[in-house]
Image (cartoon, rainbow over all chains, first blue to last red; front, side, top):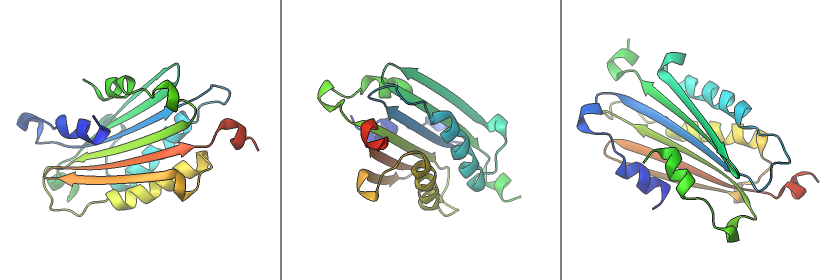
Length: 88
Length: 88
């Protein structure tokens, strides 16, 4: 299953359709750990970029970071305000 | 299955472990389409940010964009140079 298929299969239920959502995932497969991770700095820069486009506070953003032996994963979940609110 | 579980289950086979890989996925669930998409501009900014951290040319980046009725998905796949190459 491709990643896009995954997203397609995990569509929101109708009950949750009222909210817009922006989800960003970063996965870094690392061959070795000789170099320090740049994911924490990348996370800050990604949030800065995103906040140019969406008008949300920190409380609308949930961040999840996980790593295992050869992979780092960063997940940013942003609940967007309704369009009517955005237009205010 | 959570998104992080998906990534964990789709680990590269040992044959593909020789290459480092950075994958970024952006999924925007939209309630309505009254506003133009900002994904194309966001894509450019994301690439600019990423290229601060990884030294790759355009040929190392593959971009996949899909949309359906209530979702846009952007996938950036970046094949990273070996660390030995990065250190040169």
